[in-house]
Length: 339
Image (cartoon, rainbow, N blue to C red; front, top):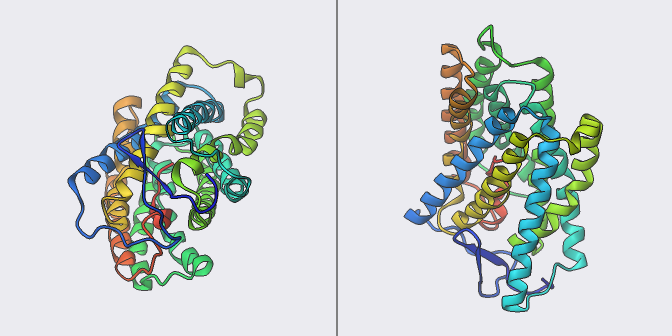
């Protein structure tokens, strides 16, 4: 897409329709959530929540799954781009778009490769709830880098989440799968994810549309994901089992395309604060899938901690958005915590 053309909007899951030309600052999000948007968000959250247990269930090196999942997503997004071009004669992404997406893509590739590895080295509960802390970092970061005017009083709800996180990390069952190495890796993952969200918002604010962004992101992210996978897995990168390939195929469709497309679709129908509150339940759902799929266990104290994290993040997101001065619903993607 060349500069000045309308931004794209995913209609449904894969059908893309052209919208009217819009300036870089668009209208505020819809005040009353529409049922279709809520259903889309629910499906997206369920899709994202099952990804962590599936990675662990595969029994493969996480970074290997990450690379092949990204290659699968690359093929699917470029197929979508080609279909759009055939139907609308739309231009391929410009050099400017590639350059704007590059920094975000490098962080995204590092995030995915490291996250998929961390999942195999710690419990689903620890991994998901550490990763859920990103909104607490994004509030001050948005003020510093984008001049947003958030409600600083919202940070008091972040303290509730931090207390809950402490309970999750330090009161796991004696026979649990959590490790210090895995927990530290998840902190690195969190840093990469926050960097990705900030840089992706920068690209979106400068006019890069959704499909255009994903088309550029998928190959560029391999620049960091590939070397990380090669370093961690070596020759294993070409030796996936049948179960491993099955997980790659499922994640390519479930999260690489479907969940991300539904997220973009929902942003046009429901307020960004509603999206943030709904996604605060995602880690708890992932833990549920971990119990069902992997047979992992959680202690009673951890359950209390999870509840505090979910409540704290929900109230934090709702409170911070009440006074936020965000340019647009697309630009406010920073509250989204999906991997």
